Image: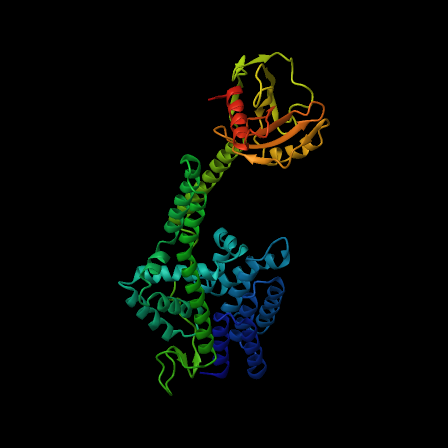
Length: 490
C-alpha cells in the first residue's frame, strides 16, 4: 500500500473515531509530504464537514475547489462538493447552493450511472435535506438502536455478541461497532437479563410507568385517606431500572470509545496475535469499515404511538389533578344558622343585627350571612351567653386567625385577661378553636371567650365562667354552642 493510501486510510479511521482535528492533521501532513492526491483531499474535506460548523464548511469548500483545480474530473471530489453545495442554505450561502446543480450536471456527463452521481443526486431529496437541517440522533439513541437490532437479529445474546466481535475484528476503529461490542458485553453478564428485556421494551415500560403513576395521582382524590407520597415513591422506584440501564450503557459508550481509539492508534485489538496484522488492515493501517450496522431510523410508529399515549396520559392526569386539587382547595363546609329561641334553659333575646366589629370573617373570605344571639335568664357559670358568627366561604382560613384572638382580647377596652389562653378541641365541626378567660372591669364578672374558625364559618362565644368552671367545661360549652347555633348543609 502506498504512503498516501495508508495516510488516507488512517485519516478515514480517525474521522470514524470522531477525532476530526487529528484526521485533518494527518491528511495535511500527507499532502505536504506526498503531494496532491484526490483521496487525501477528500479525507481532509470530510474531516472539516464532520465538525458540522459554518467555518469548517467554508474550509471544506476551499479544499474541494483546490482539489478540483488539480483533479477536475475526479468523481468522488465532484460528488462530495455537490453534496456540500446542495445541502447548504440557499439564503445563507446562495452562491454555494447554486453551484450544486452545475456539479451534478458535470457528474452526469462524466459518469451517468455512477454511484457517486446517485449519492449526490440523493442530496436534493426533501428527506435528506430535512435530516441534515436538524441534529442527528444522539449517541445514546444510536447505541440503544444498535443494541436492540443486534439482540433481535440473533438467536441469543451470546450469538449477538459473537457476531459483533467478528465485525469488530474486521473494523476495529469503527466507533459504533466498538460501543455495541462493549454494550453487549455489559448486558450479557450474569444477572442482567432484566436489563436486556428493558432495553428491548423501554418505550412500553415507560408508558406503563406513566399510566400507573397517573392512576395513583388521581387515586389520591378518589380514595379517602390515600397517602400523597405513594405516587412519587412508585415513580422513583420505577425509575431506578432506567437509571441503572442508562449508567450501564453510558459506561459501555466510554469503554467502546477508548477501545476504538486504541485501535486507531495502532494498539493490538482483541483476537490479534503478537506480530500478526489486524484483520481488515493493510500494511498495518486500518482499512475503511464496511457498513455493518444499519442506519438509525426516525422513531418507529410503535414508539410514536407510545410516546403520544404517554404524553396524553400525563397531560390528562395533570389536568385532572389540577382540577381536583383546585376544587379541594376551594371547597368549604356549608352551614345554616339555627339560633334556637332557647338554649340550656335560657331565652334568646332579640338584639338586632350584628354589632360593628363583632365578627371577624369579612377580611378572611366571603361572608354569606352573619348573626348575633344573646341568651339570658340563667345564673352562674354558662349564663349570660352570647354568640356572634359568620357563615360563608373561608377556604383560606388558617389556625392563625384564632391564635390572633388573644391579642384581640388584650386590646379590647374594659376587660382584663386572666392569664394566657389555650388552644381547644374544635369538636365535630373541625377547624380550630382558642379560649381565654377575662374579667369585666366595671362589674368584675369573670367570663370566658372562645373563638373558632373553619373553612365555612367563624365566630366567638362569651359566657360567665368562674374559677370553679374548669377549662374542659369551658371548651365543652363553646363546642355545644357552636354545634347548636349552626347546622351542616349537605
